[in-house]
Figure 1 (cartoon, rainbow, N blue to C red):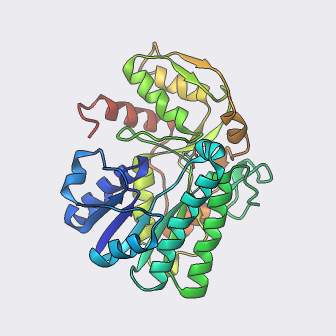
Figure 2 (cartoon, helix red, strand yellow):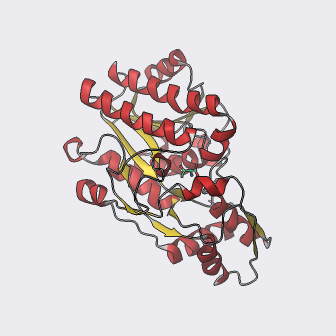
Figure 3 (spheres, protein in one colour):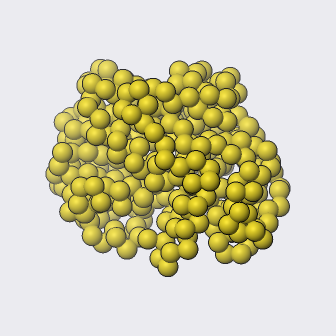
Length: 316
Ligand code: AKB
């Protein structure tokens, strides 16, 4: 494979994926693109192109001008924010994906990654051990766009042979970058509050269980999926992937083993209803079978990993 392009490189996952791709393939083989500058200092090691992901011509020029083979299109408006801006969320979550799929169909790139989410599931899916092929009846605009996007990915694969691959991410928890507008963000906030000696006001109920994953597991899983031989990638909608799962109360207990004074105040808001419609735990046997997925971090491991990362001087 030649160069790897991240579209949406300045966001929570983009920064982490940038570091993963730079370490794996060399910074000179990574191209970054966003409408905002990337705040991580290592972005300066790779080419950065300011380009609008909603503009097809700008995306074509980006891919043609930089000898791109693989695209990671991460552009999205997350679940909670999307409910306040439904049409903007639909446009942002669909148009950049369709542009990337069209450019792949034209042969401009060889392989595409696009993130889906546990938000594709609604209350009609079993909550514990949610199967890969459970009913997709999402309750948010974000979930609707991810469900539609998954079907577009499969359509472009089946009809035009586009090698597009996808993961249904749970809540992603890292220490280098902040999420924005999601329902699972409380867990990232919890770590930052604990590290800063502040109390967390948690907008979910104490017993709301959600699937979560460390950023390091998410980035490794993504790269493993992208490196798998094409014939092994049997799921062309999006793979369920499970890391660990916990409630806010369980996370608080785990953080208190390291930060005994950490305090949480519960004030559930509209995000509680979104969380309630999502799975507790996913069945990810298809990913394990097809390309060998194995998470590294359980809850304890994740808590230790993130708190150690936050204690580093520049959260490197
Ligand atoms: C969100 O909370 O919206 C995201 C997601 C689970 O996709 N983190």
